[in-house]
Length: 87
Image (cartoon, rainbow, N blue to C red; front, side, top):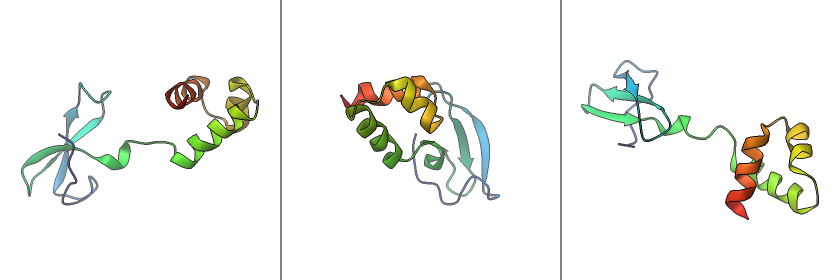
């Protein structure tokens, strides 16, 4: 279950509570106050959306995926996935 917790996972009311099977093995937490298990949404996206848009722009300008990967220091597989998702 993905919920907004009453506090961040760093506070004392939340404890680590295993990993998910559905969401790529993300860390789950348990809130002692609300008595719910959740996946903290702050840990979902490593890269900002602006960076993804810049990658698409560079690709449309004629840069190759490997060049973009080297310039921005992002794994090639990530660049390829973003491009295939958008185009």
